[in-house]
Length: 362
Image 1 (cartoon, rainbow, N blue to C red):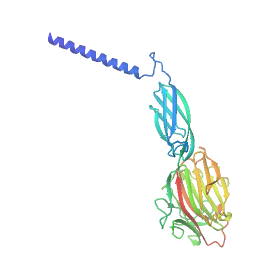
Image 2 (image 1 turned 180 degrees about the vertical axis):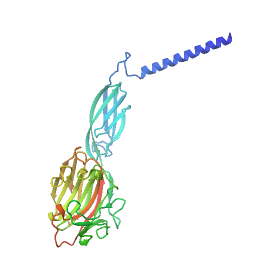
Image 3 (image 1 turned 135 degrees about the vertical axis):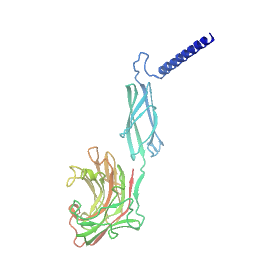
Image 4 (image 1 turned 135 degrees about the horizontal axis):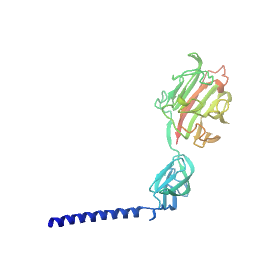
């Protein structure tokens, strides 16, 4: 009989445990649900969104330049949130408090779209935030080490053949044509007989070594002098090997020809807008071949702006329909003659295109 009572007690104890466990899960389910007792979904409500820019003050209302924004989002009956950050990025969260860093340099206003969800039901709101992001140097060459250009940063285009523009030079990597000396990159264009060409020069590029998408490029340079010279700082789309030209896109940040002394060109080539019909602007300056000037371009998803000594002279309206929304690499060269360089002075002997530095900011 004692064994029978013990068995019965054990069975009762197990039943009580199972009953208690069942009640716990029922209680947890009810307390954690945003649904009503009859099973219908309760839509979120009272959506509140705040965005605080780090370092914002009366002197710096758009922040300290870090691009950091602290978001706080809350809503009654919300189980998750979806946030469109205004720059093409999206966040999906269950906690409405988070920090985000914007990286596009300059002062930009973003419209933030926020939705709070509960089992398919949702409520949405928007908030605008203006953020200042300071420029950060991401790549540069100051040309402070004498000798050949830094091989970790630059490669060479070599040879002749006109380069698509009926040019007359042969590009070499000889120190006679290209050297870093006294803090300057010097591209020397010479009149000489070399491998079937009557002129030599140099063309260096960062292809397969450095490329970037969007930012600001600055070059401080003194340009080549003489009818027929064609100094250029420019960029090509990194997909040129597969897409070809002009589908890859070309951004000519600075071009100058000796036959039109002191006139600086900023030009873009793309499908249907290349050859004789590019997008282009120009400005006349003083002493392009005898003094150093700073040539720069600011490139974003919405525009490409061209400057000389911080003075804007051309703005191109960029959009997703153009190939200027991918990585590009840098090129520096001096050509002779060709479709753009024009007639070469028969008395030309030599000229030097000097570059003090090239800097790329985010």
